[in-house]
Length: 127
Image 1 (cartoon, rainbow, N blue to C red):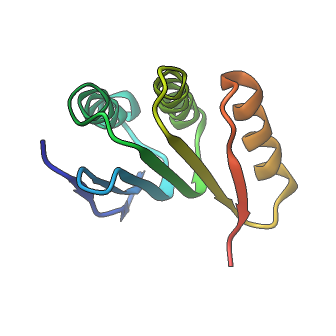
Image 2 (cartoon, rainbow, N blue to C red):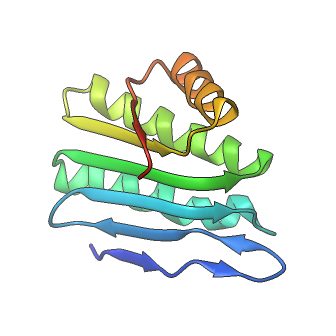
């Protein structure tokens, strides 16, 4: 199993920066997520997480550092959070950190994710 490293791109559409590391179980999605083929992009990340959970079976720390994401990205983020919640329910150690700017709107979105998935998410202000 290999790490995933994707450098974020800002063009007509915005691709987030992604770093998923097998050895540490640290995963990060940062930047902006406004993609043309959102499901295709996130399918690769979901597949990686499923393989990690079934083969490595280690703890996971997931950091979200998104300054913007559109509705289709939001749906994929819920899929990731649901997967993390299921993994946690199976007895795995999972920590989720959501870094946010000082925006009420962004905090409300994180609260919605918590309500929808039942996953405990640490809300951390960006510096």
